[in-house]
Image (cartoon, rainbow, N blue to C red; front, top):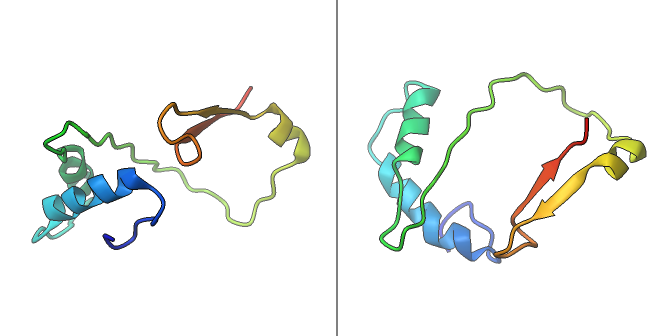
Length: 91
């Protein structure tokens, strides 16, 4: 298995080697360079990477209230829903 991948997620196995190859031999001088390299990655079968840089500063150790959990909508993906989902907070 490729390094840093889950043994149960086939998407990671198909995509991460290509991301690794795209970044080989490059000195990461900025986050933008890494984002650009990863965004250019795609496979012969059409898997493509979309990147988003989160530049906010987040506090660690915060606890989520039960009320917030009840309001949080979880949207599961059609393919491999146990691994691919989106949490959509209701404001």
